[in-house]
Length: 101
Image: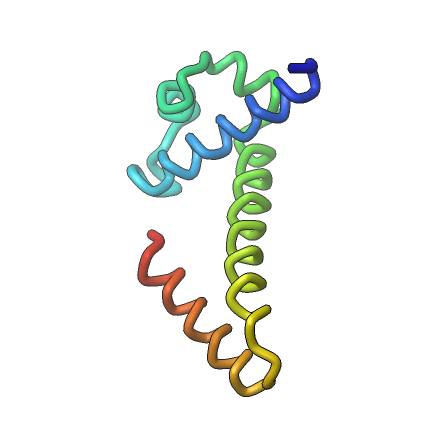
């Protein structure tokens, strides 16, 4: 594995741990130490890859938005009719809200 691949993997690991911590503790109550513990890394590693908590949160938002976008695209690609696409879009959105904190 190349150095850049390791960096990408490590960033993804930290972002996923952050999502987990936000789900568990809430946005206002999680700490970088919680993220480090959940990711199995030190706080220093988090700050090596992310400038600060805001930088980490932007990566988390991009990750979540990409996941939602993928779910929406995969569900709507089956339909050709615009009315059916709209129905699938609304249904997928509702399912995301029901299943995700």
